[in-house]
Length: 259
View: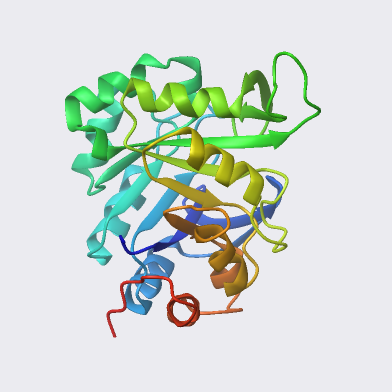
């Protein structure tokens, strides 16, 4: 069995690390470069960097911050936010990222997934999905709707159907972020995660809601995810990456332990 991954997420606004709850009330919590280095040294398997207001503000990503983070770590590094073209993807990769995460732009222009996969390989294309739980209806039969622009715009698009479309178009990985669980520290949205894992054959990252290592264990066992994305649990010092990975390994989950 492949090792499960622990992936700290750096949400960045105006070049600073930030965190909110359910995509609102974000506060400044530090320097993303320092945090990336710390998590790398603690044993993170990957780092994810999101410029969370780039799409909503209709601007490009802060490449200088990307370059500084890339220079400070030696593990896979995924970057998202404001990436709308293959040229944007190339600029991010040249700044030091190994993977590109596209979200809003992919919903608005699905062929961007294919163009990116053809240019750089499917392994470099991660599609982020921000998902809101809604009443089931004919348009949203799963009860999970895709939302874009940092949770600001509902799209009337069923999350399960969109996940399958992303795979067909060439995505190499999906990152599923539950808006309802985001920042709550109450646990991942396991039904959403497991339903998407069952619907596709590419790796799925669970995101949104981790408050303790038990939640991460649930994400990769009950939720069947390939990786657990975390933020508040480590940003605020509740646990270290090492503590989280040792807990999961102690419960039989294959983990990469580097210390």
